Image (cartoon, rainbow, N blue to C red; front, side):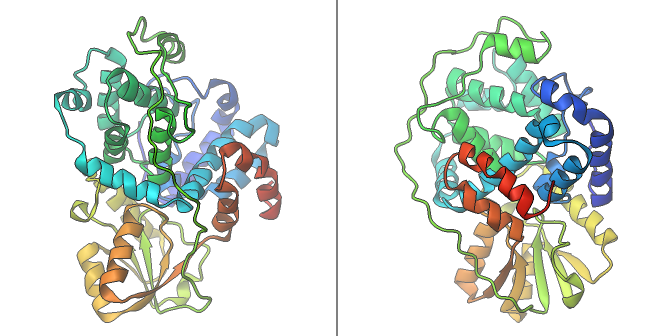
Length: 379
């Protein structure tokens, strides 16, 4: 399995999927045939996470080629990512509490066996190795992995979500954190996802059989309640001279970039992250930014956090593409608090429109997909 790092290569991957493999998606998407056979899924998530390619342009390209009913499952998977992000935007304390939780949970012997693939569950051990070697897992397998982690191995969901974020190329604060909460039974309270031996056997094409699992576990109970707070993003219409871009918002086509004196792409290293990323993930992010710098035709530069801190000593007011709730936004908040900065955030109008429908469950969001498609002429 090979992942690229430039927008042009990512678009080639998308177009190849649309030309040949998407026809199998509706019926075959839940099967994990192994790392050498991923033609039944798109494997585009690392590029969408970093927004080398955008969810909305992906949907538009798909619907330009196929009728909605033929590709509805794929379209819904794309919108799940947007929904999760919007859900977290309106409940930012969920992210804050998750980060605080992982600081206090002890990493015991059972945890160490799990992350080293030394449990008594063969499929789980294989998936740990696959995650570390390829920095990707099939989406259905992620659900099965999380369920085994929580309900059979009895480990805290927070440490599982942290483990994924450390190693996944497509690690996303919203999708990853909320998916683990969903499996645990606290995202939709009282409804957990239980991995079952027959399910694993069927969807791995009988690779694993007779797996001993806890198939009757009750949902995890978390009594914390999170009130919805409207998304409030500080922004103005006028431009500053400089623009800050984090690695999860790489394609900046929606801005008049040539009006900026300089654009700075920022990648935080692990000393500034609450979740320390693996070397391979950090290298991937670095190469994504470097690839973008090569493809751009205006003045741009890669900064680490020290470079950004030096930048704000001179410039107290600048534009930034809104990075959404997660590590980058948390880092920016600290900078603002300690340095009296005036940041003018830039957002995609599509994001803000979609996030309005993320205040309830996905069923409510899903019912509004036709409105989203028509509003932005995506179909």
